[in-house]
Amino acid sequence: MSNQLPVINLMGPTASGKTALACELYEQGRFELISVDSALVYQDMNIGTAKPTSEEQARYPHHLIDIITPLQVYSAAQFVEDASRLIDAIHARGKTPILVGGTMLYFKALLEGLSSNLPSADSAVRADIEAQAQQHGWEAVYAELCQVDPLAGEKFKVSDKQRIMRALEVFRLTGQPITKLQAEQPKNQPYRYTFNNHALLPDRVELHGRIESRLENMWNIGFLNEVKFLIEKYDLSDDLPAMRSVGYRQALEFIQKSDQSGENYQEMRDKSLFATRQLAKRQYTWLRSLQESHHFKSYMTITQAQQDLRNCYG
Image (cartoon, rainbow, N blue to C red; front, side, top):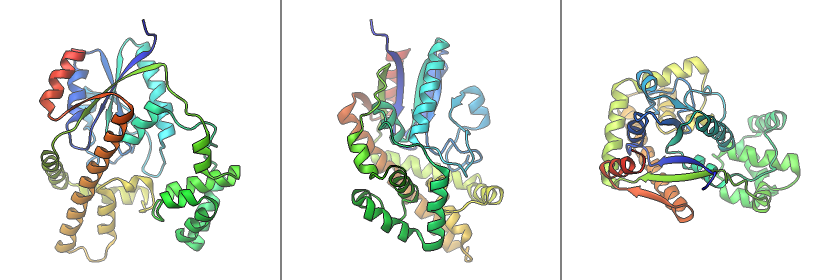
């Protein structure tokens, strides 16, 4: 008999209905939920992330929601550390963890492990890079990266500020390109878990309709006011990782414009819809890539998923 601990992964693109499925399983009383969502970690970012309400979270508690402010950074490595700790604690309570979300990078990091022995973040080095960017611009910082790590330069764009900073940070700390270290270093495989992977993959047309309905509701219940509140409370800027979340970047750009006409408002909404559809497209691509390396069941409809999950875990 295997000593590996069971973990249920419930994956899918945005607005696919995976959270509702996880909550349905939670009601059986044998599970706990862990959020796998890089936007839900942020406090006060509620409407634009489709975060479960306080009432929903009271009924269906999710770990790893509201754990940092929008000014802070949360990495895949931090997620793996936090999720592993929670998985072990949930098993110790005699329950099974359900990891549910759409941040495929986090799922990949948990399933495959991360490169070991890369240096931890260094606040002094990062401060130097940020100061360099403020003085000379991110184009100059990106040019330096291209010189010391051409492969990273090919992979990243000038707008990938966090990735550029991390790559330069690693080079300055080790004298080696991050791409070289990642290629050479072994992976930390989480062998103590047995992953049961499930993916909800609805038809694209149906998903686009669900996305449009979700965004329409988001605007109707005051998303723009939420972004204005965030700006006032945290003095947000567009270079923060939190503002890379779809919808927030477009709303922030709109609010910062002097011309907030109805035409520009509609343009912002159109951009948000396009960005959310692009996010879903990337999530499909991630899932296809993961499916090549890891077995998981996929479902076209919520009904199919409900029936199978009930059979598996009912």
